Amino acid sequence: MVLRTLAQQPPFTTKDGSTIRSILDTANAPVQNQSLAEATLPPGTATQRHYHQRSEEFYFILEGTGTMEIDGETRPVSPGDAILIPPGTWHQLTADPGATTLRLLCCCAPPYSHDDTYFS
Image (cartoon, rainbow, N blue to C red; front, side):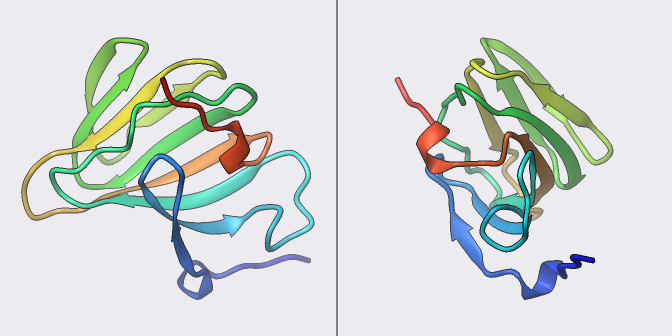
């Protein structure tokens, strides 16, 4: 059995500028096909617009509010929202200004990799 506790996972900054803590991925478990992480964005900040050539992503918003942009379409996001980001689609997440950090779960299949993050 593999069990990881979120609070024990060290944070790091991804290539797009978000801070994540890997819950389960190739670095801390015998993961082969997906990864799960908690990501945070301070109020008023955004990830750098990017895409992943291979990875399909799910975002699940836990706390805070913001705006999700996928291939030019934008929508407000809030706790309880699940977002599908297909491979090859440009995307950017922006946290609303205010006092609450945007916190979400991010699942990637195949697992997240800096090498699979592309910018304009």
